Length: 258
Image 1 (tube, helix red, strand yellow):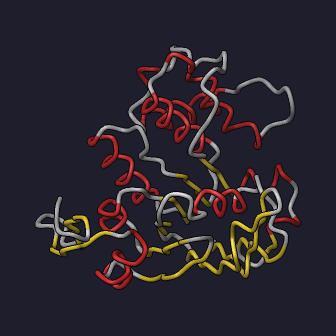
Image 2 (tube, helix red, strand yellow):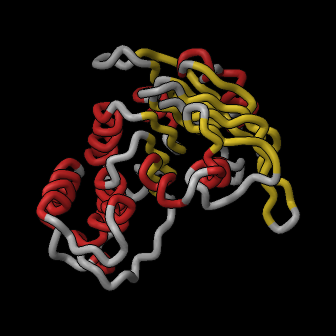
Image 3 (tube, rainbow, N blue to C red):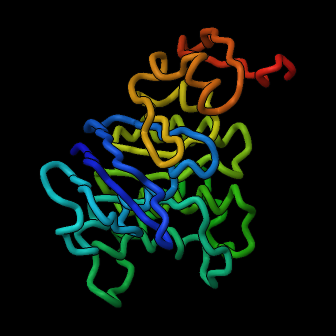
């Protein structure tokens, strides 16, 4: 199922944050949102998983206007992992991940054997099953991020929305997470801070700067020296990753220093 944004505009505290965003994520594609801090990536993603309602424009899931669906129906179709989540929940890791089953159950329904199997599988996929009995509040930032991804996987949705999911993760878990997201084959849109991760794993990239999408397409077309200089203020040299064959960037400041 594809995801489509048409002329989405968002205001916060009277200030326009997103200005006429148009974006298409094809079914099964991994789409990366990149851009400088404060450019609007997180705000745009919040409109997709319905934490923020645009004051104009539309978000479509397939042919359905997302804002015409009930919250439960949306939660059965889209799972989101925000950039920041409260860390003081007095629940175990297993209980946190099991919250992903909530849209599929009646209120106050007990956890079933099937639920436990799904949650166990989700924790296993993110290398967090050994944390199952730990309290969520005691985890490191990287561990919490993996558990929140497990919660999203336990929702068993068709679409994933991830806001800088590699934040706080060590290098191995960054790579494993990106590989897992690709292997899932779900329609996925994610904000990515690391440009080489974006280039190495995303099918398409959209660049958002000052609330506007200023470029979109395959990584090799989007990540040009001119764009990186104008949007990020850095100089880029390009090479090909020797193992994957994907684009790889060597970045430096515009005056040439590392």
